[in-house]
Length: 123
Image 1 (cartoon, rainbow, N blue to C red):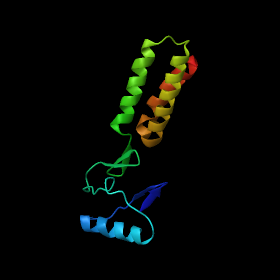
Image 2 (image 1 turned 135 degrees about the vertical axis):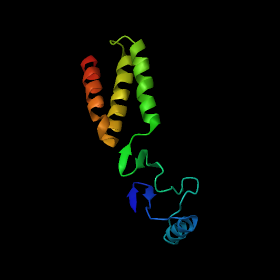
Image 3 (image 1 turned 90 degrees about the horizontal axis):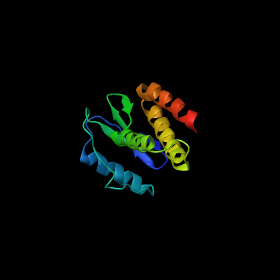
């Protein structure tokens, strides 16, 4: 079991709906409530999205949506003059997304570092 702020993740072999119901009852007995719409059971080899991180086979990667946000910011940055406040705002936002992805996926760290240097030189 792991918890992060208000998220709880239970990992157990051969989990079933019965195990989820048992967990829900156990937490309810202790004054906690599970959101049924957020509760899910994953197969062993299936990608699991846990607190904004995709986990599979012992590795973590950033969700596709995070990469798409970075891409959209870069597309917007390419259309803006570098000396505007709008450019600075988008650049700071993309820096945050790059740092976020690099923390999740170590393979992305070098890519994020290069983009970070380039963007900071304009700020």
